[in-house]
Length: 290
Length: 279
Image (cartoon, rainbow over all chains, first blue to last red; front, side, top):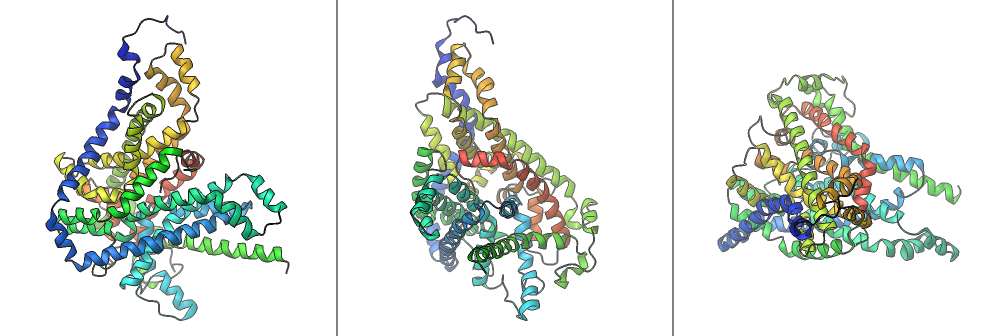
């Protein structure tokens, strides 16, 4: 490219600040119109104290809050422990393990809607695959998976894990791959057992990534609308809702937008600390090692 | 049996369990899609008279639920493609500003984007819906496209920015010495070098739009404007619906994104490892 002779330029053309506005303009427009304004509107609606009263008087709301807690505590922890365990398996250098690793990613790659609907049918107590197998193999009449609230919530957790476990496993596999090999060599010289190697080499190296991942998946599990709505629809009798589905239900089924927003707002004690912590962790290191 | 063989056996068993767990719902989808509609209540592990007739029925739109199959498939394609293009354009521009220009407010924009990326989209659905009403974007495809753009652009900016950190600044400086404007640096230096990350975030936006359910069913309502995911969701609560047809649609809807995902998987890994994680 031929460089033009250093012609004097208008100062605004070379200033980063002016160019910055130019490059950021489309994003700023999107942010103001579709993020800032809706959030401001939600905050305004959430000042309606009567909506809190309506919510707290509704036993379904308390059931929903409890479900959300169970879903997070069991779903997230089970998923992350399984992911940590399986990441050891999928990091093994065998060809068949790598092929299985690709298959294992399928739930993650396939759209959510058809697979959840397929699982919904599998769990049908009369003609679903699960109860058919239970009967064929063990002569047991399987339970009504989706019409009993406890089984319903368990099924929701299972669907959630089926869908998201592969992703977190692969993140942790990538984390394991990044651990310097000489650490393991040194451990081998010291005659470390498998457990000691995990305890003293793998886990300390993986800890930061594991913590970041767990916090991220806690937030996103809170927002997992599909696993609940498409599997049980929050039923039976609204007893398997989580905050995400219940908020939508108040707003669009019962046409009570304030109650819907307040339902979402009640997740703030979990949401805000996690968002602040994560924004700091992720903007600092800007990557997996955060 | 030696200890080593014993371990290998354990691994093999684990592999089988993982395989069955992963494949069961997909296998169920597949066999349902080839089961004749009236034989679905038999609860068989393999249908007695497998048929591809369900697919033919879907393609001919020969069912009340599927009157607009082709239109709705087209809607999904259009919304996914438009979202991808817009997300790529906005995020590439913004990531250049945040990562390559020395801006006082750069870190602020970066953190705002990061915060937006962390808030679950479902939690903003209600005010978003009302704001879309104010903008007269309800029941329009642009409404859904903007929803997807809103929730995927922050992640895209973040991944692109992190990836761009691996592109040496000396290239920008050299171009600047040659008298290139910021725009020329962006177009001739920046964009060509971050292309792998652009493939990753473009695919991410495309898949996100293709799979979107909540915002699609809130924003869109007319049956000629909805995406196929909305139609699939409609079946959900109806046990008398023709489920084998639904599952045939499910298979048809799943194949393109799955093939796409696996064909750009190596870029996705680049995007993930340079940009952290996205679930």
